[in-house]
Image (cartoon, rainbow, N blue to C red; front, side, top):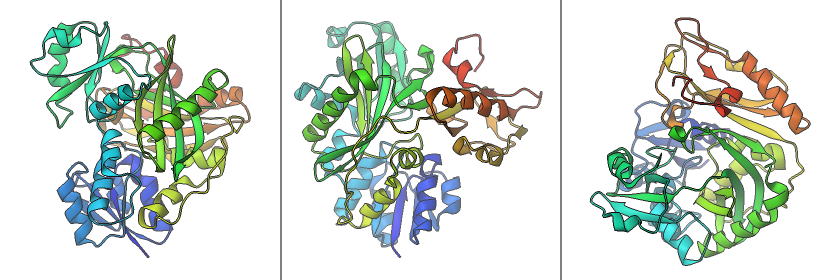
Length: 419
């Protein structure tokens, strides 16, 4: 039995914590929250901020852990690799690569250094001069350098608006600068894969479907496999992914890259070296038969247990991961999650709220109400099954209104829907 430290214990880490226990290991869950569902099921829970290197280091030392990991979240990746390096534990990335893939300033500069296509950008401080943005055309996207979950991200039309939104962005950062990008009208595509001794295996290329409203830019409502862009851009996506792994010295471990496809072709939005946060630990095995979560767990304590590789195929069974949100209100009744899971077309499901909770205004991905993964024999059947699932799903408020925002509503979301 090994003792493993999970950095983060939120909804994205629950399946991994359960898996570690199923594999017969002891799991320590470290999170800044005093209680989470992940901590409830872990063997030991520790109050420690996933962004605090020294706190995670001391936790790992105190519990004599054999390995450290995180899944489904970007920013702790640096801490996991840095602390593992300090303790001579197995880790996927060297510290420099871990910084490149978690700090957007470092990431974007490296994209430019190697002519990897990405949105034109600038990194500015609070008192920036307008000349710092002369090479960018409006509209702009502003975001924190070191955050996640679409926190602090805004689409704006002017430099004055950047200034007025600066504090709203920087409050989600541990730095004094923000990233300003030239907006690129696009469809989003994600790539999940694994690198073994520098050799890339791609598992899935999916459409990352987001709210159409500029006010909720980048907030994901679904992942769809296979991608509608597979036929036109599939080979280019694979080649670009291999190129990035090479230039960022990504030699081992999981990858999760986000691309933007528009009238100028493929641009890289951002890259991460972890399992995706849209329950890819469930969907990747469904599509490929590869137990990617077990590989992630095994290699965090035993570097010799390398992944053997996988040949990507886009003609596998289709699915849609629905990441649903709700309108604000107090939840007084809800569909039992077991009622969703019993349906043969639902691969998995889960909620982030319980009865009695109050759901607040939708601002970013952290307000996600839950998820369910829909399957079907073909893409049309998947779409039909999505609607059947939403017909079953309710989060009811005190007035009897169903707070759930259905997929079709989210796709046409405008200001007439009060959030």
